[in-house]
Length: 312
Length: 264
Image 1 (cartoon, rainbow over the protein chains, first blue to last red):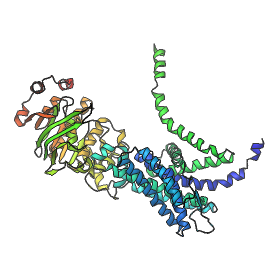
Image 2 (cartoon, rainbow over the protein chains, first blue to last red):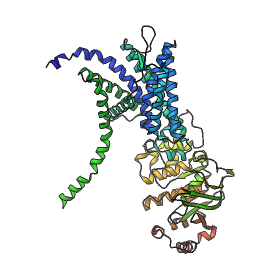
Image 3 (cartoon, each protein chain N blue to C red):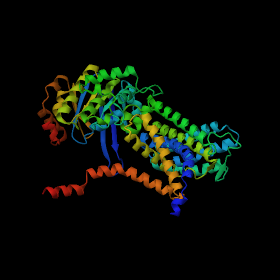
Image 4 (cartoon, chains in turn blue, green):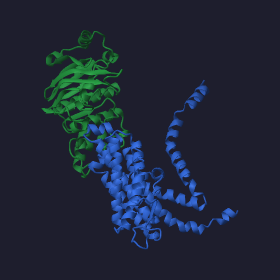
């Protein structure tokens, strides 16, 4: 009883806007992961490193006196470079995609430390700098987050309707056919990985500003959170019967928001925050397994045996 | 239009699985030649087509398409000259993309893919016309995902994609083998029509000897990585399945392995 008495509904209400703002930032991560996981059909582990890279580059450049918006733009280019490295490891050096991502991510740990002047974290104060987003001005952060997410969705929607975007989609769907149609699939994969990591780095740059610091571990689990957001978003898209690409992307960002609201509620219920990662992993595993288990249920040997015995 | 000079290809050289797939293939196709290719399993038919398509580099020899030496170019760099239809109907088109998007991908074969629209309004009209020529009703389903189509429909679509930009060489690798007989017949009819209309230089592999005789103006037979028989013009018109089986037994010293050739 004391447990329930200790839960304060006002506190939950108050932490919602901040939660939603962070959810929007994770939604941008999810858009990046969507490019690789759904469109290119590779699980790219680089993002755990690039999220931190985005945060580190942004904070250090702001501390160096650069405009916070320009710093996020620079972070994007750092992310693009990291993604391109994974792409080159995979396509030009023949290393499996998942391992290429792990290698880049591993290397990024050292690079991120170096960017942050060999420190595990670097703070950037909203009092000293005109940050793009900050947890101190949550309404503004919500607004900015929404606009950035909307702009990115718009650009992605346009891009994947172009000749080049179509070639990228074809590469992920059917490599054999793409080559027969004269598409350089190696370059397309590098491009896709670069764009994806560019988006994730943008999100990292925004997150570092929002929380007021960049931390060497801030990107850990980005891929899993991105996947969770995608899965939640797709369930929502399915329920609303939205198959249009822009609507799907919007649902993916919404998935990020839903994910973070769940996190906020879990923390409000005084769940030990150490278990958040376990909880997220379980949710993602269950949702990834459901389509497979469903198809298995349709063609099960056990059931076939039962049917046979029943009809005998 | 297409010339193969002394092509050699060995897979897994120096291992226990070493296999000489092409052992000195020489072939010259004139503009508009429609050549059917027959031969037993492992004779090198698909390997020859893959050599032309540039799936991997050949060990020896040179390949010319319309006078251009393409021996040193990978598949995607010679794709502007080549139309391909595979045996597996799933391989030729992108399942998660719309019919018109697939056609638009093919329409840009050999061109730079920039940031212009992926499918333009003018193109859509062209695609509608071309699709209606297939008589499969696909012209009314242009925005349907290709994954919803049947194997025969996908193969017909792939054929259209392969010929939308006139290829210098059309490669058909048993493109009706995975279809039921009725659908196979339809796709073959469409093949004849599109090849004749556009005067396409074509190589068509088939396991079916009757089809090999009935289609095209020239027939070649392969065995153990070589072309062992080359029949053209009037001589080809008078061929019978029995003739071919006899010839096969003579050149290979064994019976033709596939029942399909007799029953088809």
